[in-house]
Length: 146
Image (cartoon, rainbow, N blue to C red; front, top):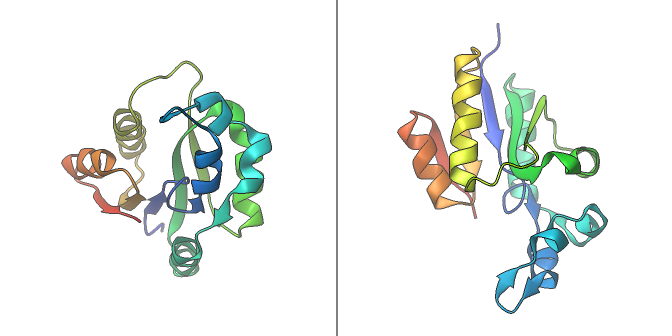
């Protein structure tokens, strides 16, 4: 019997993307084509605090899923990055192409679909306060990660 799933965001939680972000700032706003370029993921570094938490939870029988605002076209490089950092994930949910909703709306929709499919989400870790609030409203214990 599955004990349920714990979910994590990537950028800002499992991954420190601050170097990539600073490289992709253009006049105070983010150049998203730059930030979401797989060739720039090498600028990132692992955030071991949350990776080690994911590992401990996995070792205790929890299913680990990753819910990210990264677009689907980044799937292969994202999977490679997560594996290189030792993140034990059973599912990776990425933003469909053309989905331009705000992060909290997209992630709340993903979580609601997971719940409807029978997946119990015990907790989610995210660095976006609006996402945490939206998931809390769904009854998911969401934690603001820093």
